[in-house]
Length: 89
Image (tube, rainbow, N blue to C red; front, side, top):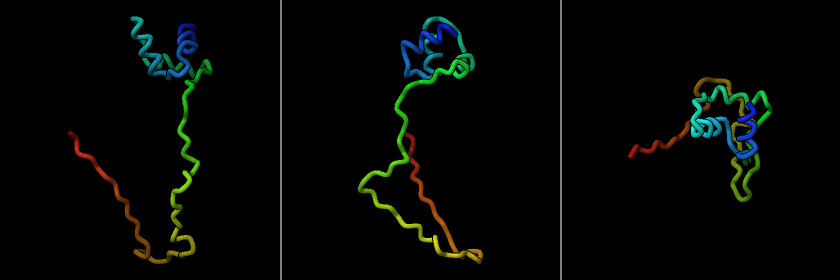
């Protein structure tokens, strides 16, 4: 745990997988589960988290078309999704 703390002070952006890799480079066979001691020690990686809750200015806000519609029968409302699958090179 002391060595994990030292590595975290040197590399505060490292998560458990990267710290496991650093320990492996030092010649120690350590599993990622053992590095989970970071959670018990209260150590957390410092990195920029995605900010997905703020809308981007200029993007169109689409209306919800079913808001005031009461669906009472089967097949009255349909939904469809489109996904794009890329071919492996």
